[in-house]
Length: 138
Image 1 (cartoon, rainbow, N blue to C red):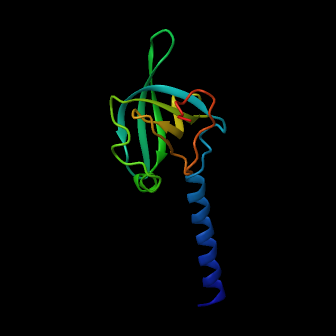
Image 2: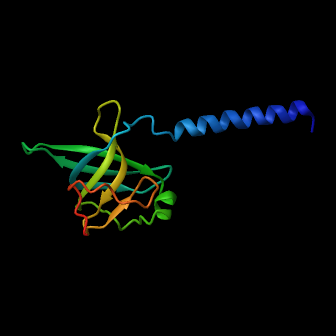
């Protein structure tokens, strides 16, 4: 293979890697967390991104629907999150990165399921910082 052809392959590879990296960045979301609790209305554990839809009721009783984004089903399975972990009707608590545009969207960080178990949906095996929001058993 000539140097020119080899160089062209390297440039193309770097260009595609850059685009893939940008697509999977967390740039649409804030760097800080917010806490939400509510009732699950829909769960879509799919590729390339999974979604959990949550109705959150404010102090006045008005419900707002939130879209919570997560990695695809393969990544969630590797984290120990299965299809039965959360289902419509479940009352859950989440800690997530809110959307930068102010819409009712979040990138999931931690979720406490209806059974009380807590999973890190953002790739680690950590528990959230215990500030009293989650029901962490000591």
